[in-house]
Length: 161
Picture 1: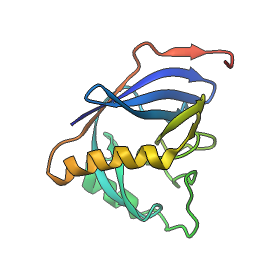
Picture 2: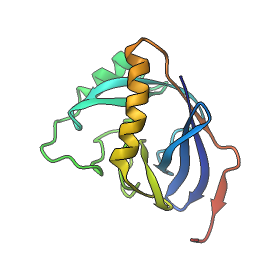
Picture 3: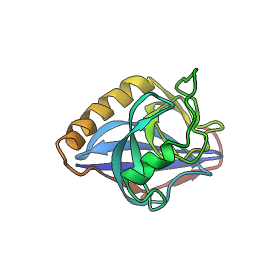
């Protein structure tokens, strides 16, 4: 399964974009400018996250060297008692997850939802649920899921719209 993250705008602290699966729009995205991954291809794996207490789609980078290494990195996280959509990870942990915005989010995540304004999303649980169900089925069947991050036609905004 091929997933495309098409980045569209950079404004101050956020990068706006959208997720497409088989050229079909799925949801909007937001990323922190300081910790966004470079454009390129990345494998996606499901890893049991202590913070969310469930399997989460993790972007497997060169740093993580695959799903097993990512699981070891996750073992370093402490379990939090109170977790909400805007809880940030204690270390860099690039994953696709629900959230409302990128403010103080420095964990390398791609936040999924419906764009309200630059860097701010609504309805994150619905967007994430739909996305997660599609990739979970593929991964459970042993299929490879690849995320292609594209910076084509990326606009640098200097003023708010």
